[in-house]
Amino acid sequence: MISLHSNDLTVKINEKGAELTSVNDATEKIEYIWQADPMFWTHHAPILFPIVGRLQDNQYTLDGETFHMTQHGFARDYTFKVLDHDDSKAVFQLLADDDMKAQFPFEFDLQVTFTLTDHTLDVSYHVLNLDDKTMPFSIGGHPGFNVPLNPYEGGFEDYAVTVAPRRSYAQIPLVGPYNDADHEKTLNLTTPLQLDHDLFNQDALILDLNHVETTIMLSSTVSDHGVALTVENAPYVGIWSPYPKRAPFVAIEPWWGIADSVNTTGDFRQKMGIQTIQPNAEFSADYQIRFF
Image (cartoon, rainbow, N blue to C red; front, side, top):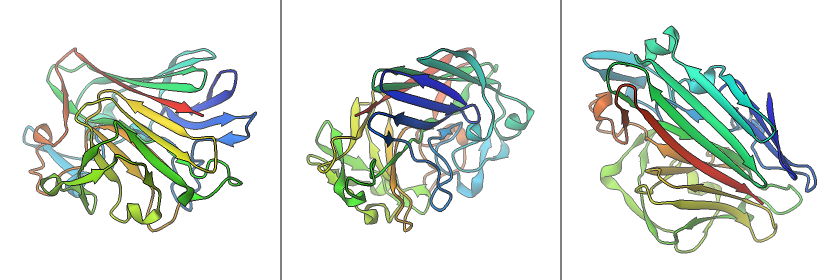
């Protein structure tokens, strides 16, 4: 386990999956990150790579060949190498091996950097294509946040999600685990969205951000504490809590990719939301979480 420290916060990251597992404010006695209670969800904040969401029948085709991969890809299941670590920063690396290439036939170098400054954690992804062919892929974050942050200050329904810019957003519905972008809806977020478990009865709320800088804040009128996640260039964000379990957490998920569409052909290069990197080129993306 790797630890970062600021004056107020202690951050812990597991080498397995380079997964953020704790952001703790000892003074305020607040743990911000979901602690993976197996009754509800066994993760904290997995990295989604090289897919986001689920593939139709857990498979895809690439250049005439069929490959199998389960939901959200495999990065979360592998131990990353720690390339650099000090009190405020840690860099993790995952290199393709034969097991990974059986699911995703590319040489790649995935690096994830966590940087803690005061009350803000920056998470950055760098994906280098080491192959001699163009690499299609997706990547995303999936941090889960305790709701309520303090069990003595309100409950789930006392919290709200505020999205800035405050406007109406295109919402991509899900049919089962697959996106149905052909029937997108409009979600009015000019005012805060009050949390209710029934919001998630069709799985995640997926917003089309169109690569516009967006801040998603989780806060409550009965507490001074919350989180605000800002992402500058993501096409999508998912807001999720498992249903019908009534779990005491919400995940805010910046995505550079999305689950297969209901009418997908299965061709990975034509997959909705797919990113591409030319040989020996690099993709970079990041987001910040402010804890208050």
